[in-house]
Image (cartoon, rainbow over all chains, first blue to last red; front, side, top):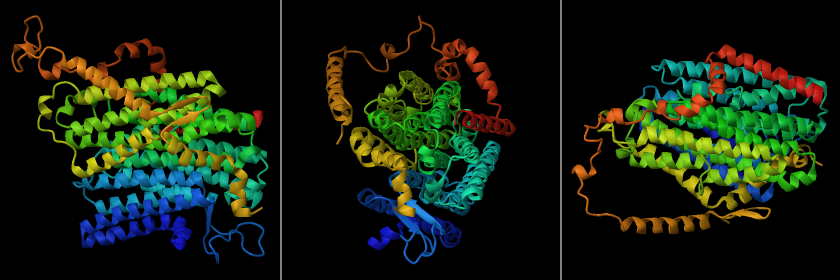
Length: 520
Length: 112
């Protein structure tokens, strides 16, 4: 077991990547065996994430050096700096892995039914597993260049998955937009990496964090990194690609794209806290993040009110929910240099934001899967054409309602707990921000009242009299997410104490992140 | 384990669920005391529109684009430019990206 834990960081990345290339081969022999391989791979990655998480919460940061005589040997003998590829896993990165493992497993199970009628499913699952491996790589790497490589892997596979159903022209357009946005963002990241390498001759995040000076060039790199990641995570005013892409992708892929966007949020936080840390003007950068968050909340939710396409409506709500996370973590960043404020409300705000990350992935994932069921059964995403579907799709209606209530911050669901934590802590930083947050949450409830009323309530429309409930596997994946939502809602103290708070601590504690690689 | 504590405040969902269930039980009790003598499937349970025939189901259901019409009208001044900015053209998205990177870099140069 110890050996498995030691090697788990690389196995979590390598197993999905290996399975991705095995999938088309096995698909030629037996399609059921291919499906079993995909689900087993996702479950195995999830299992490795759990055992690694247990070890990290018990023993602290875990590093893995590729090609070294011992995986924990970060700096080769006769060298002063890390030279090899290093994976560095702390409480924050493993927290993100838990989100990704959960949502990708649910999306994988959902795919078995949702994509059943599609041709070329071997290619679909190859791309899905490539995306899974790529995103795991982004979270686990301790090296900036590898972050760029994994960002590209996840972006290319993600773009291809968005456009997978080529018979829909809007899907092809959505895929193209996703690829362009991702490529431009990744190139800006590469440009920033070039700036660091030219100045410091280093690529390792921890080693860079130790020597970074916050020169004029570092400020240019910071602007590129922050805004490139902000665009990839769909922050306003760089959000416009989100509804265009999320609405047209297969529902299971939309749920995964949502988490992959959150990983870019993770990369943004890693850049600010672990790479630059207190060398940057935390108040300035913190306020930049807060303003991006406030804009995302307000524009996201108000644009959602307009929508009549159910997936576009949820996509705009995703932008809004991302805003809450940016607001909360931005407050933590703004007071990073003030120990008293950090202790009083900064860490609580960050814990609330990080708790909201997992909640956001779960309830928005559930909503997208439920919207996918509607499209699968009714053949449209247009709310104007729906009505009375709860008569024939009772469970889907209940699960959609559960996701909607959680997203709107209605007690006792998980969204309420994380939003309450955000309001309480942000209020101490600036009351106006907390009040806007509460207003946005009320409008969120209004948009889901509209969506639920239009799709599910009223007398069943004659054309939908024979509509059936969701297939069993699609239902199973939604039930998995629902159970976790209810559990997180009923035991928020447990999740904050065990997962969110250690993750916030890991972000704040830059010295520990650096010393795990460079020592001392 | 269930409670979330912050300073002097706390949030305990288990207590909330218990209170909610008690209120639901009270509401159910009140409902059970209501009129039970109506006959299903007769005129007693049909839609009554002053004796007029009710319109077909499709026309009775309020469409999504009609919901919050007043809210959208009231905020027309905000919505018109905001919707206009969402062109759906990737070139425009890149212009936004360039503008925001530049603005951020300028802020970082000036403020620090």
